[in-house]
Length: 299
Image (cartoon, rainbow, N blue to C red; front, side, top):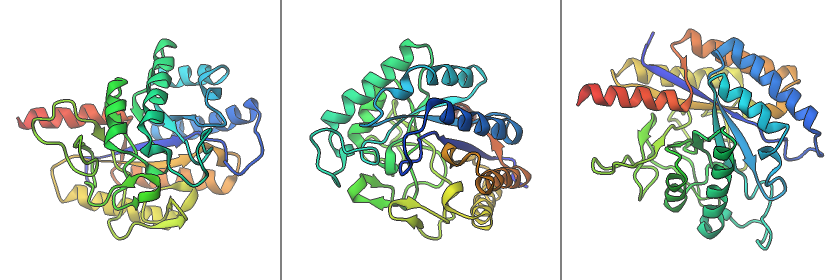
């Protein structure tokens, strides 16, 4: 069993985008159930997204949610800025079907303001993740300007030009990202590069469960099956067994399915399976520290 493979659990806290409005208490109940599962199965190590979007620009940056985010960070979890500009959109003045992630005049002030808000509250973001895996070098520059050093949008193999997702040829394990091309490692002289943690992928095919949603070739609890997710983890573990280098990848699960036994049971099962087959659960910050430690030891 490999001992050099680490898994970051991306917890997507967005409300179900096709549902009616959900009261705060309903969302917090689902968040609490997810927290219970991750405490039991992963020691609480996770990366929790905080949503901002055109129809909920500030909601999750205010009480009662800020109290929950504070509890998470005090327990050691990481928070992730997650702008969903098109799923919960489009933004005012933008036509439906367009991609906001290409518009840096929109994205840069949004990123800077939301990062500043959380920092002033004493619950700063550790990482950034774009909606639909969308990311551009210009967004990367804004993320670094805001003081964030970790990025979580990469799904290797995915190319969705209409969503600014360009991850063809991206590494299958964590890497420092080139400022000019997010799917390539940084050059040795790039001292301020973002640390990228890609989604676990079997390297077979960029699968989709439905349009613009990765599926059974990745570990995404709500849009895959347990056997498929196990197969992806087996591929990650096999890569780890074949190299002394750290293998650091991520998976995703969504809080909106909490309270539904099918999804809860599948999530617990894949976390148990991964743990039984070498996975060590870490936060993005812990993963970066491990990566930097190995790099320093080799220097």
